[in-house]
Length: 50
Image 1: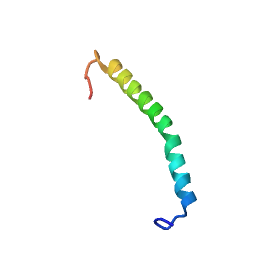
Image 2: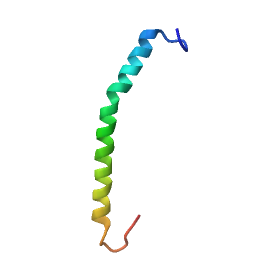
Image 3: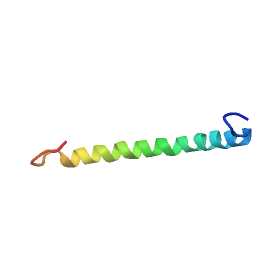
């Protein structure tokens, strides 16, 4: 028992974290592409807002 949790709970937590990494990477790529598209649309217009 470590920090009040049995070993299988830690195994489950680690598995979830490992499985979530590809989704996080995919989300980060999508988010950066979205931000770039936003900047492209904003440039060249009056009142360029940051």
